[in-house]
Image (cartoon, rainbow, N blue to C red; front, side):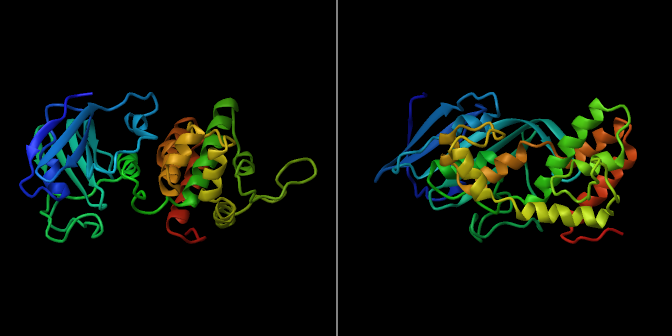
Length: 302
């Protein structure tokens, strides 16, 4: 643990104030901000190591109530959220979350702060209306951890279960494709957790369902899943796919737990591309159509 540093308060009250006290020289550090009537104590320590992900070292930590904010600085590779284009292999991000739920993020690319365009949307509940354009909320497991450390609910909503069903299906199809010389579409459909196909007594698909029917089965399977129930099972040690201890599942809230589970499955688009490279081009194209339909929220494929 690093020795705490003492700063004069000077009306430091917001996330944007606290974030300026995080050093850009030290990556993978955790900061705690503890104000008194006269001074601000800044506690600093390396992020606890964890083989699952750097953020996992924070699981289960609850900060003292006297600490009014928590911050961190991470380094690594920055990619575009949509195109996945690599923006930099030398990126740093500073994040602060206050006990009031305000959050602030600063991203640095090759040492220069990246400022979003003027039309960047900002969550009103996370950043005050008067916040400068370069301050915006982060999202993900690290931010979820910081909220939970302060006893706050993880921000935002849990991921859609429908996409989780597609991810689970893709994982099964991928394993079958690697173990089968020539995987058929009928065999892939039979692996769908929503059971969209009717099987004959011999175990074969009697009528191959349409893509619309498979999409409907995806929504039907999602309705049978429940994040609260899944988290309860993890808390009881009955759900092992999350790589979490029962105590860690209890420390999370349902939203954070859902993000962790969904994030443990590779992105569907990546699996679809890999499936195509394995020689199952038509299967990958069909599943991509189902995924697109699910994301659009309707059981219809052109």
